[in-house]
Amino acid sequence: QKEVEQDPGPLSVPEGAIVSLNCTYSNSAFQYFMWYRQYSRKGPELLMYTYSSGNKEDGRFTAQVDKSSKYISLFIRDSQPSDSATYLCAMSASGGTSYGKLTFGQGTILTVHP
Amino acid sequence: NAGVTQTPKFQVLKTGQSMTLQCAQDMNHEYMSWYRQDPGMGLRLIHYSVGAGITDQGEVPNGYNVSRSTTEDFPLRLLSAAPSQTSVYFCASCQVASGASSQFFGPGTRLTVL
Image (cartoon, rainbow over all chains, first blue to last red; front, side, top):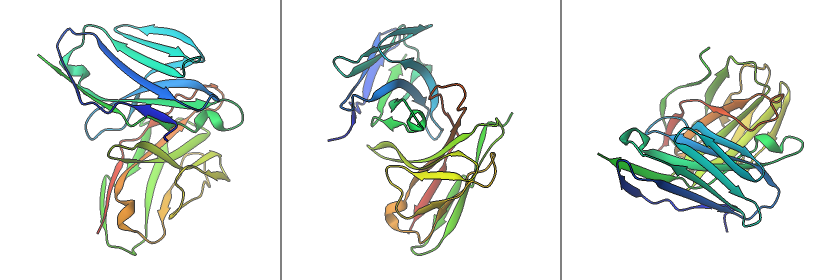
């Protein structure tokens, strides 16, 4: 069983829809939770970063972490065609050099059509 | 700043050949790492380094070698290429002092082993 599970989709939504992306994990040592966006044939770029539990909002994006359920989510409001990309969740533990050792989900392919 | 740069962008090797993937960053980041990305697998950590002269293994280190002689550079060596090493390789770096896992990724090297 993978440490981080993410539904690969693909997910196709109309422009303006609310998108919900999710990951579950099994390692209770994970403390840092990230969402990366990856456009086709490009490197991942950090979208949202959260430490421990709670919510974080940045414009149209909201990240939620529920450590009791080992579940994280990314919500995209008013989705745009430019949001079409692969979204990867990533996590790491704290302490020592663990913070930089990211464990990724498989990635969800999102298409927002006009 | 150029950020994280990787060369080459594309490479085709024959089984048994060796090569070095180059990675450089100009952000004075202590932490650097190599990931490989395969379809349906997300990104998996190969090797990482927390500073010049210090390297360690990640999740999938077999068949790869690294060294870190300077802060800026972190090359990845394939000792004897195998078809199973066909993948997209990403180099990443982050600042230790920030205490955050906000890694910057390079554009990737697409490697095909025949």
